[in-house]
Amino acid sequence: MRFGIAVFPGTWSDGDCARAVEVLGHESVRLWHRERDLQGSDCVISGRVRLRRPPSHRRRRPVRPAHGGGAGVRGGGGLVLGICNGFQILCEAHLLPGALTRNARSSSAARPPGLRVETVDTPFTRDCERGGVLAIPVSHGEGRFVADPSTLDRLEAEQRVAFRYVAPDGSAVGEASPNGSMRDIAGIVSEGRNVLGMMPHPERAAEPLLGSGDGMGIFRSVVEAVAERSTFAVVP
Image (tube, rainbow, N blue to C red; front, side):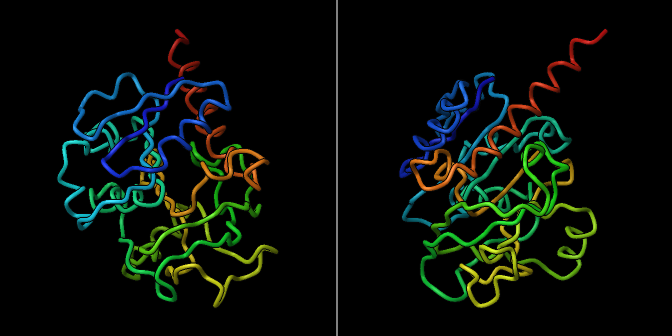
């Protein structure tokens, strides 16, 4: 399968994402921020971006279709994975609810909290264990997820919270939260469950040499989900 990796000026995690994909034996293609052609990508990934302008400027760039701005993705079509700033973009494009704001307790979180898998009923977590705690690093200054109470309740009721920050032993993260996210939310999925936004960096936990291989469960899940869809597509 083919992963499309969105590239902005200042992108610095596209190489890590490509490496994770290639470790699994699959193809990656870079999608420059002005491109509208997804080049046959089965899943589009947007990772860490360092730009000297507000996130709202990124939202208006032509790359938006490559992040799933079309009706097909809204209706549960293509798969989109937004990591770190990519999560911000998905919220600003209204593909995911809520917003990411400045960290509550520090200017830039850069330590590995535990990440508990809250649901396996998504194309991104199907290869994970529900309740399992992953070691996946974080690195952000604007990672505090916020939403109004009704939105938070709906996310919980519909099991759309994909990941939650916890202590390494799985207990409540408490004051050790890397950013103070509401309800310790670290990642959510769309209503169609085909769009995932998460602040931690699975591409930086893709091999034991990096300190953890736990992030590969997310990439493997995508591969399995796409393979399953392809199988069903050829059944008469």
